[in-house]
Length: 287
Ligand code: ADP
Ligand code: MG
Image (tube, rainbow, N blue to C red):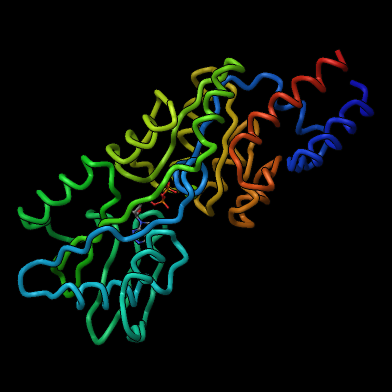
């Protein structure tokens, strides 16, 4: 291979807002046939807003938001920020905060041990009326988290995220290059499928724990696919490293950027299409 052509390729990439770690990264895109896309922060803006807070009888909406908001205030997760922002007034202090990666948060507030996150965080099944409300909101494609304290569920917090305006065009671009896009997320299946439908992705892998995202990539590779992964979060880093080509959103976390071979500076998914097209062209001039 002529290193000069690869260097020209990386130079042109920089002009397009595509930072390529080294010329050899372009080589690894040659055989890519599958592009795995993280949902939150990659396909969607990741900026969530609270759309409903539904307490159980005996708990007020204010108390639900105050305790859940206090714990979430210590987390940088987009869901956490939506909940903390929706809690009005001064938030009480949190002790023994723990970030339960890919599942939620835990902390002690006003002497209560508060949990906010996936339903599985709670020891007991949800009371029927909460379970029904959760299923309804999820069927509408909302993200629903459960808040509980002192061993009981206290309410639901419903948040919604929006697709980036450029994501559908990017997916169409991937399809035009003959690549198969796959949506990968820790979020539930209904939410994932709504987002996938909105941007034109047929294949969805949902409810994947952060530690298992890299295994999903490994499984696809074992099926004989050559995989590019696009992500932004701390939880995407192992998958970005495992993929044949890792692309990180420049708007994402440093950990993701470090694990990836390519950074899409503007956080615009269309740059992933540009990156793959650029590397194909660059390699074509070499061969
Ligand atoms: P994604 O793969 O879409 O980026 P994550 O792996 O970060 O999503 O989170 C997966 C799921 O874990 C979320 O949909 C939510 O149910 C739960 N979760 C993670 N962090 C939090 C948090 N700070 N507060 C509430 N729920 C959380
Ligand atoms: Mg993400």
